[in-house]
Image 1 (cartoon, rainbow, N blue to C red):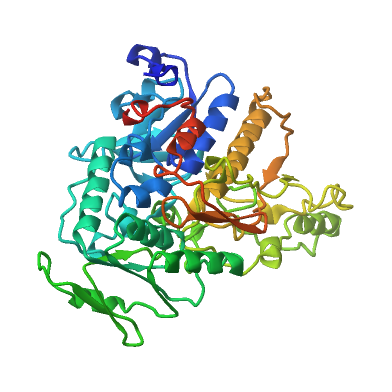
Image 2: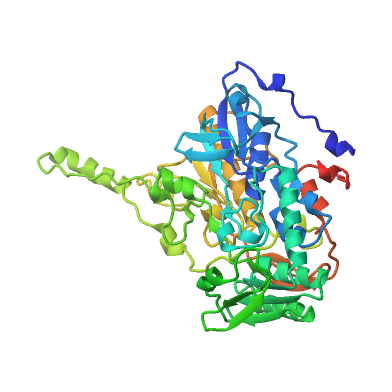
Length: 526
């Protein structure tokens, strides 16, 4: 075993102490949550801890799931240990003073605590209080890569997937059953022309060139939120692999309900809304993701937009529910107080800046893997981050001393931050790399708030001032594989192709990003 994997988990005795500890809880341990937890662990002062909560035992590298659901032999590489956060049981969490991880399901949240329970079997529930929280629970994945089966009813198959509890061994078994399902089919219909659908279709066409593969997309362009050149390259790549591509046709989901019965050897026949029929043994619905914001909605319906299901956030990534303006009654019979009353009213005057600066662009259904996982693609970053102040619209505002102009940036939940796919983050695409950058902003802002409160230093590469950062999305970036070796990418407005792909999608690079350097094949079974 390599030296990288010899990191010892803290013993249970080292986790227990009587020292009072304050808590930052990170809900979700994927690309955004794991990055947030790392930044916090490196910067929190003494007396504070990070508690990372995720229902999975390992970080799920979901961008490799489509490849691992088709090609055998690499599925174990998509589950990466959380080596920096030792696991605690629910019963021990209150006595842990160090940074720690809990594998559990979050049942509910409020502004100061979360309610947790084990994934399977037990009815036990535990309450965990927090001072600050980062909500990084992402979205429910499309059914072909959703190991938890949120849309199992929409994707009928001849194989029943076992009850899933979030362990690596269960994840490996689930991906292997998906491999068997693909191998058994003579024809496959992939619905959805985003990155996931394209990658599924091209991988199946390469691994099983004898199968008839059809890709159905409701729009007239693949990956429509990106440059037209990326559509052309992706379409050409599909056609070179003999994938039949049908554009501008939308699946009639009612037709799925009337397909052949479970266990039947007859192929399915589905139709589009225009009446076109398509026959296939296997149907893969790769039609986007549903934001996992139900816990926030249950806590306070105002936190989630009714039309998108996304959590409302400030540019600081704080959950946004503006406090109500207190009605003010002028006292005409007291002239001495009138001037103060007007000033008081002005100080509480607000207006909606976000509405004036927002864009109507919608995110694509499933973007590429994080840019840091592809060492040969130029990295992309978010736009320069702007210092944020509660007290002025601009650093040079002439009204700084008179009016707290930026009160529209206040929220009833200043201690809760939301990042990644769950956040309505100013038209940022839904991708691992955007979640990563949002998580950095959120984590650094929490460190700033703690610094204000405790007047202590912050451990970081750069000096962090007391003003909160604002997140600004960078330009859209994506990398989409077109089979085992070819890929198309768009980074900083440049579209290109590469032919240097490998079967496991360079999984070791993501392991290294998670802190496990120089990983070998044996290590990736851990």
